[in-house]
Image (cartoon, rainbow, N blue to C red; front, top):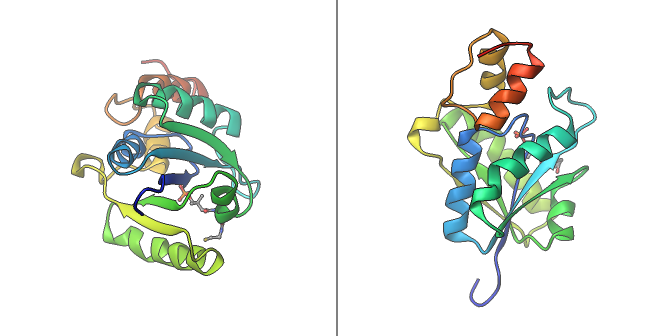
Length: 166
Ligand code: PNS
């Protein structure tokens, strides 16, 4: 991709953003010119946080990364969002072999829909290999509020959602 700016789109539910997601974004900055964290507004899923809350948490979490990281909402097909934002690479994080089958299917479907957009899998730091938004919600919903999983602002929102105190 010589001479051409590489814009990476990093899609997900981000319900909520975790340190694992942020580790992937940090790695993207070493490889690509711009990274767009794209938050899926999925009406079928029942997210804990509204799209607005997820966007605010993401925006807050990426401020230290500077202007090469942006965040957007998207609805519908990822490849269409990628085209709208001139992204030529899709990023997905892979933590374990168990992630691979689903990710492979998505990558191949996206390639079928948009052969010019390449999917790149990145591996987060090993210390985040167990981390997922789903487990974060489970832990907080059970009243446990560890500091090592999500940024402080996200932890505060989880505490609020589940009516907890730290
Ligand atoms: O963090 P998640 O929930 O695993 O992210 C899944 C996501 C948002 C990447 C995926 O559901 C997606 O891309 N949805 C958009 C719909 C789409 O493009 N489907 C066709 C390609 S599989």
